[in-house]
Image (tube, rainbow, N blue to C red; front, side, top):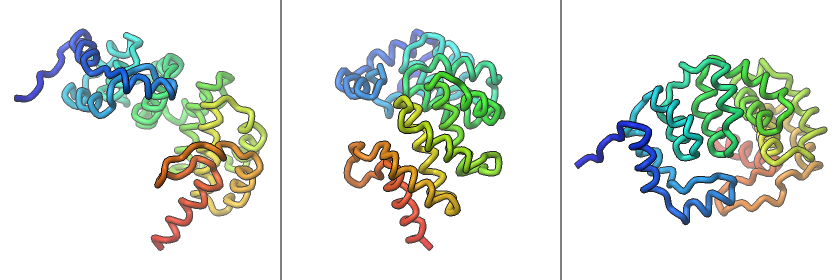
Length: 227
């Protein structure tokens, strides 16, 4: 027998409450996320709900992290206005919510490029980190809209002392430049080595280190091995 499909915000919140696991909550708390729902189970719930823009917006307005993650999965990204996405980004204080909002919603929006430039220049480091995340995507998919040398200048001067989330996003951009653009690879490696950002970040076996020089070299090695 298939599980029933929640029909309202109250139904969704009730099911999320049954899925809350103290052990998952403790693990998430270490990463700044304040929910205890296994993400596979959360995705299963969203799949049953299917796309429902109205319900998505009601879930978002609860402010609950798990509910907002479901909202992101069941919303229709192209429907949002630029102002709506800007407001949601500024409300998305939890790292996982911001990450999913940028990757699953904003990147699919016709307003992505405009928002990238606005957020990139924002003085709030969390908002700026979203701009850098979108910039990392542009480095790979549409570098013609970017000044890659200018980005490297900014990273070189600012990344080492940037707040954690902004630093992480800037480091991602640095790595993507080095991986995808051979012309700038030597400079990207040099910046990464001199700044040493995330050099000692704990990395599980068989995972790629976020330390830019190791990350760049490993991804380039893999690409060359395929040729």
